[in-house]
Length: 205
Image 1 (cartoon, rainbow, N blue to C red):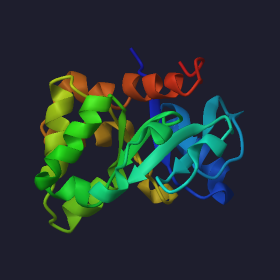
Image 2: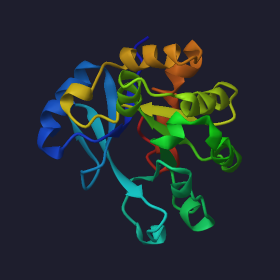
Image 3: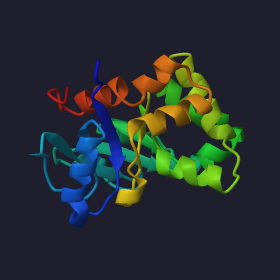
């Protein structure tokens, strides 16, 4: 069986779009979520979906575009899940201090309690590993995910073509971080599809 992989968080510049699609197609990606494209399109059978980054200080109700709407949170202060934010939010992208320190457990429990899906950027995780940083915060989040208390999707977070890797690399990374095979695979396939369907993209798979 050939799985259809989804890169739910890609930051590669639009100027490299054709090369990105070619690489993604070779790597068995069927869908890529990009920040800097204005609308949905399909290139070489790869579906490209726009992403809107939402900050707590914005007025999310004003965001009417058809896109995946993601709250980017790198500190506990940025993880303010008020009703006005939750009303339009499709997922939370967790990074920064929230990945490196387990003392923010209350913030993770908040995510669990509201049931909002979480996106993790593989590029940031790999950077933290390369610099010898602690990943105790991420491990707490993954432990919740392993126990099916939260939905987590791993995106490439790629800022350039060199950071777009084959899904097997990300699968191996998740296994190394302690996830079971089933949960690791779901974070790259079914979970991203579920998040996109929640944003109204029912036809992604």
